Each structure stands twice: as C-alpha cells, then as structure tokens.
Amino acid sequence: MSQILDAEVIVIGSGLGGLVTATQLAAKGASVIVLERYLIPGGSGGYFERNGYRFDVGASMIFGFGDRGTTNLLTRALAAVNMKMETIADPVQIHYHLPNKLEIEVHRDYEKFIKELGDRFPHEREGIRKFYDECWHIFNCLNAIELLSLEEWRYLMRVFFQNPLACLGLAAYLPQNAGDIAKKYIRDRELLQFIDMECYCWSVVPAERTPAINAGMVFSDRHYGGINYPKGGVGKIAEKLVEGLDKAGGEIRYGARVTQIITKAKSGRGAIGVKLANGDILYAKKVVSNATRWDTFGNLLKDEPLPNGERGWQDRYQKSPSFLSLHLGVAASAIPDAAACHHILLEDWDDMQKEQGTIFVSIPTLLDRSLAPEGHHIVHTFTPSWMSEWEGLSASEYEQKKIIAAEKLCDRLLVIFPKLEECLDYQEIGTPRSHRRFLGRADGTYGPIPAGKPWGLLGMPFNRTSIPDLYCVGDSTFPGQGLNAVAFSGFACGHLVASTLGLV
Image: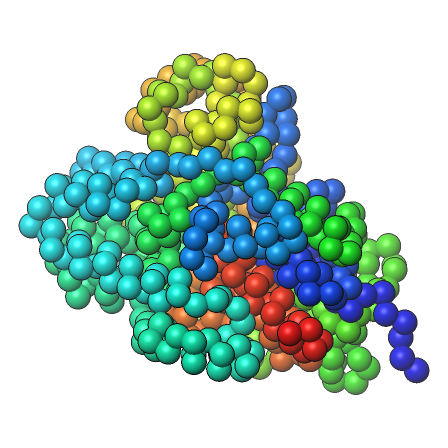
C-alpha cells in the first residue's frame, strides 16, 4: 500500500544550498517542504541580533551578486522566484596583513591588483600575470555555460553542443589544482605562500590542495561580478529565498528537527520520508539533505550500513576545521573610515593551517551602517579551531578557555586596529561547540577538505547518493564551500531532482 505523500520533495535544512534547491524545484512546479531545526533560515548564512547589532553568523564576503554572465548564482537563484536584493559594492575583497610586512589589497579593479602585487614582486610580474590570466581562462569557460547538474546527461549533451570549447576547456582543468598552475609560472617562495593564502582564505587548504576550477571562479569573479554585500546583512538572502519559496507554493517549517531519513524496508533501498524529533513522519517522492554528508549518513541514516561510495569519499576527504568566532560591537572610532571591510592577519607562514593560526576579520558596517547602533561598528573575527580543542571541559573550564582565547585574538588584532579593546561595547564568543549546537554540523565543520593532494574536483561527491531518491546538497557536495558554491550545488541538485520528476 502506498503512503500518502506530504510533498513531492522534502528538503532537510534551510542553508543556502537547501533553499536554492527548494526554490528551483518550486519554480518548476514541484511541491516542496523545507524542514529547519532552528527558528530562522540560512544556517551559516543566517544572522542573529544582540543589543542593537545584527551579526552575520558566517562570512560576510559574498560572491554571486553580479548582474551579467552565468556565474552570478545568487542573483539568478533569487530571480527564479521573482526576488531581488539591493547590494553594496565592496571596492576591496581582502586586505592581507602577512609575514615580512607583506601588505596587499585585492582591489575589485583587476589591473590595480596585478600592479600592486607586481610592485611587491617585480621579478615575478610576468608569472603573476600568467597565473591569474589562466584563472581568467577557467572563469571564462564557466561563465559561458549554464551551471546545472553534471549528473544529468541531457543537460551535458545540450551544453556541450552549445559551447564545446568551453566544456573541453573545463574538462582539462577538472583534475588540476591551483598550486600546479601557480608553480608553472612562479618561483618566488614568498609569492607562492601568498597564493597559498589566497586559496586558504576560502578553501581552508593551500593551493596544492585547492581545485583549479574553484580558484578560477574565485580569483576572477571578485573582479568580474565583484564582492557585493546584501543590504541588511547576509541573512537577508535566506529571508528573500524563503519569501520567494512561499510565493512559488513551497513551504518552510521551523523548529522541525529531522532525526531520521526513512527508507524502504529491507536493505534501505530508497528514501521515502523523514521522522521528526516530535515523532511526526512526513513522506515524499524525493528527500534532499542539506546536512553535511557526515551527519546525513552518520546520524540521519545511522541504522543503515555506510554505502561503499560514501566510505570511499570519507577516506579521501576529512572535515574542515570549525571556527573560534568573536562577534564584537565597537565604537566607530576604533575603525578608520578608509579601512577595507575584510582583512586577513598572519604573523608566521608556518602557522597558516594551525589551530587559531590565521585570523579573518569582517567589518560589514563599513558598507552597511544599519547593522549597528549609530556611532558603532561590527567586527566579526574568526580563526580556524578544531572540536578536539573544546571537548572534555567542565562548564567553568569551557567559559574560562573562551575568555582567554578571545583576549589573545583581540591582542593580535591591535596590530591592525590599535584602539579596538578600548572601544569595545559588546562581545560574544563562539566555538566549534557553538557551531555544532546551532547549525547542526558534525564537529562544527564548514565542509570537506582533501585528506591528501586531490585530483582537482574529480574526487568530490555530487548530489546523487547511492540510496535511491536521496540527494545531498551544500558544502560537502560539488563544488564545495562558500555561498556561491553552495548555490551552484543547489542549482545542480534542483535540476537533477526536477529531471527525475519529469519537470525539465
């Protein structure tokens, strides 16, 4: 006897990947329910409010809001459900503060950035130009085709016949990493370390472990579409997608924590629904998990054996670190008006990948003053940290360790902003335990990183899983971390699921 369906598709989690999947499907006519364990949408692309400050949960450096080409995936995702957002252009992607007084700003103007980097490394001007121009070649191939599911053969056939040169160009880069390309043109050790940091700031691994296609996207789109901050904060993206989902006939339910993906009896063949923490069971033709693949197969399918394909992927990739985060409210006098919105600080190259080694700083109120009380700024500081550093502590030990870690971070930031501590108005400290608790992510991770040197993107899992009618979306699927990347994952997943439902 067949079950009565609650929806054609159930999406677990309202991170950006899940919301893009849901809106893409709803726009094509599918009935969709999104189940969100928290009270607001967005996951690590969400927000929280304290004492008049509106803080972004995760990064404030946003790609994907350009107005041309095909790689402006956030713009396209909103447009699919008749939504749009006002954004504020950021003239500098990052201001780097690196060892040996290496101070570089990545300007939105490509030629200005190339000149500034070449002025620091005049003997490598030609190599710098060739490396970043090759990244442009990758980007131009991506930007020439519609970015949908690489698992749907009709799409692959169509896009190949429409633009065979771009497809062949991308295929050549699939097994390559950014470090391989950099070393073709550059010999200076410090410059190669800079390119490692250029990759690490968004991939959490150095260039030799960063897929070339991802690098081509990031290193070029920051100059093409640019970094554009959504007015009202990053959380507004999810809110707009939810509004569009509702208008397209979809539904989101908050406080709906999924505890189990239900499969057909015997051998777990086929996902048919989900069970919630309150005991309710919802049935659907397709289930999409926006949880990490570790949570999906380790928790939501804990009674099922781990499929061989998932075991192989988990051998090749490991969880990226989580973060120690400081959300600070400070008097405006702490931050010079001419400061860049985003900064990266590192004192010793050997510490780049270590626990609390690299510091990331975002000051979104330099772009949007409405996020803080008048006369104040938000300073969001975060640094990689592993769950193992924060477990096994008593409540008092945990609080004390947070305070000490926060003080050390603030002390290091005084090199950039000497008045920071004396201007402090509000402080909130988050650890990997906070990320696990509020975002429901295994060990608080922000996605997978390769355990060794990968073959470009060829080892990344896609949306389809070995369990029929179960799909994964988000940063532990192709192409990886970042809001624009998970939007790509959502476009791909939505297209793949829609094709199985006969909607495309």
